Image (cartoon, rainbow, N blue to C red; front, side):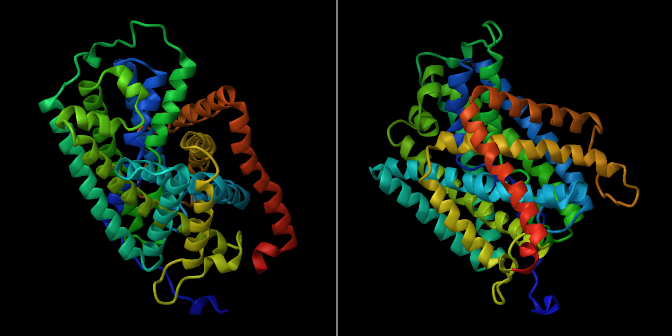
Length: 443
């Protein structure tokens, strides 16, 4: 097939849509679940808020690093492209390999599971039926993104706007009408108690997972209008919006609920809404969570196939994965393959197991990506339209915490960490074997 005759991706994503993609992919289900994970590890109000502050700062630092790289490279693929250009095609291949098997597909599966958990608030269903709901959500949103990037990005923008408005309403109502609990959690003091740094680090992992997805807007560079300017702006605006929402919402949770309730709850958002609005508040909040997960999954499902498309175009995946639908102008086969594997992952384990595996492997690559920024700065032929604020301190701090998170995860959960790492390392011999035999270039 003549590559010049193949259809191209459409540039339809402007700054509002790109910013909504950042906000919408970050604000998924985790903010309605992860506060309980964090509070159970750091049982104090000040400690919980400190986790969220540090998580937000680290996410912003990562977004700043990504913004500079996005202003240099405007091909679809994001982190894959940055690793390939800074190090080698093998590094980029490992990112795509890990994305498909655990990181990106695992995030899709994890959020879909949480969506199904909140559906069960309205319709009591067993575990098998819950998994069926999660799979149905994945397939439905994949079908929407299959028929066009404009449809997918518009849907995701509408969902993002709706859930941000709803979160702001929850924050205002929480402080205006609460606290309803006889025990005010705001009296707990993290600094007056002994600090368990391992548990604090694990809580930080949970917080960072709630901020996950900030980098995904870079995957759609070839469908973004003026990506050198639009993507860096969207990264910074979106991250700041989310950080503000997260801090205020968690403060509201802790204002209206006792600390032990936040720590033990499986639906902390619904419990907080019940405390503020009385009976029926939980139903309203559960509906918001379902709404929110739809918006997040729409953006995440849209973004991932662009990496597999870019890899196939570069000859690092089967060529048929890089085909663009002649009518819808989307990487339709990559969307289908992602949907199938994500649906399979739904049945592989619990939400906790999925997110632990994802965040561990993902942050290895984030740290390496930031190292790549230092290497790329030495190349005089590269033109950047944005430079990281606070360079070299900001990327250096980001690198330190990225690998500190990885080492702590290995120390705290060796078996699960080795499982996540094994998925990554298996990709290396696969890359060299297929590249040497020419299979990746000819299929």
